[in-house]
Amino acid sequence: MNVADSQRLASALERLGYSESAKVEESDVIVLNTCMVRQSAEDKALGRLSSLKPLKEKNPNLVLGLMGCMVGFRGQADIRKKLPYVDVFAPPSDAKPIIDYLIEKQTTEAINDFQPPKGFRWESGTLVLPKNQRKRAVSANIPIVYGCSHACAYCIIPYKRGAERSRDPQEIIEHINSLTEQNVKEVVLLGQIVDRYGLDMEEYPTLAGLLREIDKNEGLKRIRFLTSHPNWITDELLDVVRELPKVMRHIEVPAQAGNDEVLRNMRRGYTDAEYRKLIERIRDRIPGVSIGTDIIVGFPGETDAQFQDTVNQLRDLRLDVVHLARYSPRTGTLSERTMPDDVPDEVKWERFRTIEALQETIATEKHAAMLGATVEVLFEEKKKHRWQGRTENMDLVFVESDLDLRGKLLPVKIEWTGPWSLIGSLAADPLVN
View (cartoon, rainbow, N blue to C red):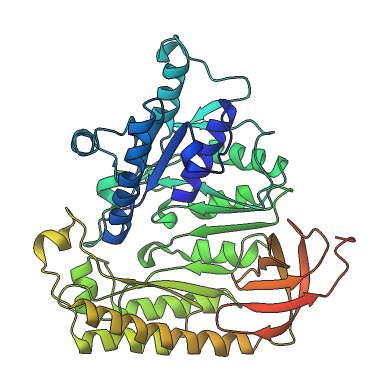
């Protein structure tokens, strides 16, 4: 979501006449887009802001902006008092305050009288770029649900990004149509709980219905969505993933823990048995699906035995991707207010490494089964001498080629496998595709 917000802001700045600066010291405008999901992210953002303060003191005309979760969805008085040298603040997914500030700074026109330049328009608080401005992106992030109303005990998102609200479906379709006209080949639909798209608006389609509409776009090659919540994955959605060839067979559905008491304390709303049953249902309805999960280790009160339940869950289910995090209390969340952070940091690290090692073994074995197979890969960019892309199951694949493979969907024969990536060779002439 933050990447998508940054991309839209960068596009808006380009349309206003700004260009990317190679050196931060030579910039006229610096915007820091922030995350607060973990304490380390907030600490890093504050450290970065502190390092930028001397640039502002040296050059008073420098515009320093702060965007994202540190600003939050409600009110900015506290953050403004804490960071008086920052010129403009923008909440998550809303670049308008920054654009308005720059327009006011550059012109004598009142902000309310400002009309977007030709080809530009506001969409959900974002100034959307004309078609000819976007660079050669292959995959684009498309927010479809802003905010969240579920309020897990550890999560700061509802407090910083506001209540859940679905984006207008026609606006989404037009946005994607514009991107595919610029040769974007893949879109990733985003939401804190993406499965809940449309449930807050009676006249909107469900996520499954929206996917059917997006699938009609002839320029698209792939459609993905994330992140799902176990309680909101419907059979209708799974059937759409199975039936529509453009919708990739990969689902991100976080478990967060494998112990029922920990899950209750987290306010997740399901049990270990229910999560296991869901994974079985997903695999039954979508042959060849890959599944990713999120796990938090060291949640308040988590015992060694409770952690072992999580290890057992992952060992039994053998999921394809595990995103790991050590618990970090976020000020204002339920867990921070009511539960002591009583698992020592060294224990959190030990548990982190235990799961990391387990998943490395599982991923190694899963990838080894792909040796010699031919898979379709959508190539995104070249790093050093290798092109990189992904299979529909999100496997990272590298191929050596002197040809321009960007945006091409090509068959690749897998010749080497490792836990985190694959290496192969083209199995077809890219000039024909």
